[in-house]
Length: 100
Image (tube, rainbow, N blue to C red; front, side, top):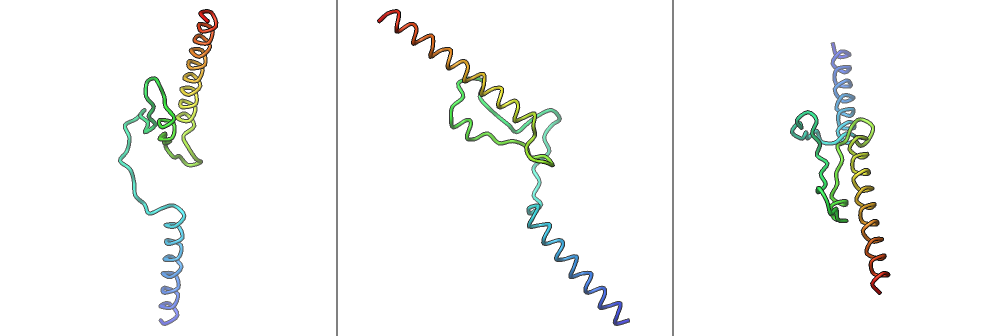
């Protein structure tokens, strides 16, 4: 009887240590409200993206890191914004050279 009690106490201690280790590794267990299907917490303005907008971007976490489709979307948007800005700068420089 005492042997069974000792095993039970040891099993409870091992379970407590495993639980605490898992809590430290995986967080405290808070969950965000589920998102509607097809939606994303990743937000960017429609145009005129600023540095602050980029700094505030947050990606949804999935099993192996960030959700790749969201990262790809942000990179395409930023690439398009940079291309637009560079094109506009080139236009303004050409206009300045023509008038000056």
